[in-house]
Length: 356
Ligand code: F6R
Image (tube, rainbow, N blue to C red; front, side, top):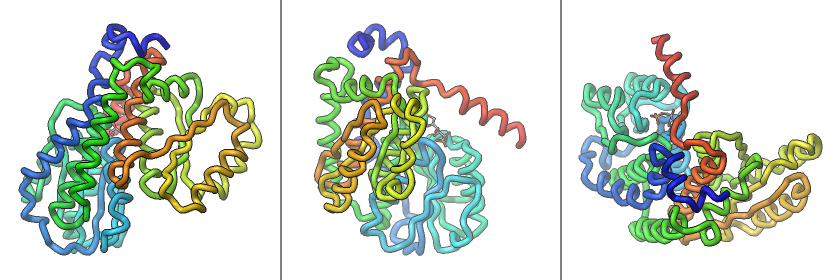
């Protein structure tokens, strides 16, 4: 566990500085606000769309998951997240398709945005370049450019915050300026606690990584923003720490997974259950989480409960996400693993590209 407090060892292992990228989340959010503010979005502003489709995969796909949940209580049109090559039949003329791909070269997102244009949808493209940018330019569609040089998952602040603030500017998403301010302040506060030079004894992100080390994390979210964040934690643990992780959401998990911990105890006793919580949820949900944790506690090596901090849903979502993101990098370091490379994803994409 000593590596977490050894800055020289961290530097040697984390060769492309994924930890620095995650530590810098606050600046990404601030910069995203500037990018959204400067963007010319005349083609989509106030257009009165009848639906919103957010297209994207993996680290970019999180943008759709989180935005859908952040705006679901105020948005007056259906919002569909598409994580595949194909669009559902109901996405057609009158919809806005938002294609989010950090590289701009993800084939599922390219196929989906091409299909959206064939159907007469308006398009907003968000990428750091690549084919998606070329497609947008070729068809006179709005493209918002992000800074280059990141792993897509490491650019999550740019991806989701820029897209969210563009949707606010286009009068599609109702996000309060106070909530944006609260989010920035909270993330800046958290940054001071999670940085590498805060030692493990005082650093909740390092402590979380220590808890997860040697155990298979199972993350329980709650239908809504904590579901998107639970899935993000799982993906970050997979891609940064290169270890398995699983997730599920309340209340659905109470109708299946709750009984699924009865057998194979020799496997589950090497797992850690992490329950994401929000004290503003209904009493029913809170009690449900307590009862469930008590019913299945014995099956796990450890159970952790993480309470979302902040007032607004945006601040809560960003702060729980930030904790998981940065802890997944500390977990990679504990496994003596360079967090940045995702060789198997690249190998798969290269093989698929050969098919044309
Ligand atoms: C890699 C990562 C992946 C990518 C995904 C889609 O860091 O996070 O999950 O996000 O392969 O690629 P992009 O985001 O470039 O469309």
